[in-house]
Length: 114
Length: 112
Image (cartoon, rainbow over all chains, first blue to last red; front, side):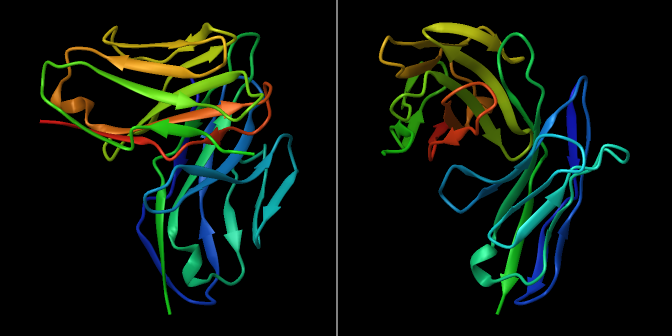
């Protein structure tokens, strides 16, 4: 089956620090990969995505590269801000002939302190 | 364009009761999915509807059901509520297969 493993949190960083959140996956078929972010009291927002090997998704200073050889999609940001404090979810989808669903990791809570 | 709207935002129910949650997708989106989010299990797929047909169902008991109307609005129903059904229920809509899922802010269900 499909599964996503991401580093357990919580992660606490000082403002302007470098962020890495590790994510690895197993999938039957060729998945698309996503990072979603959830702010307190809200639903999930798509942060970035990549649909094929070596693609790099990027948004708001965050980046992740689809690494097929290591089945990974690690999230990075060079300089975090207090406003980046949220829970980050790595996810995959394998679109078959039928429906479409996301398989999520457990989430990593990031707290950025001034 | 309005986002995905879920109502109500909060619900408190008693064990054994049933509950209905509502979701209005983004205009033009025909696919609606439901996910359950709990601290222990994380985010788990419940089901997906497209053009009033259930296309897929996750690994949940038959007490969890849903439907989609001709205007793409969707409802999910949970019967005979258990304490373990306490969760944030998220609805998401999608324009077409493979395009990003857009999530609502969820309905927080508490079963006492």
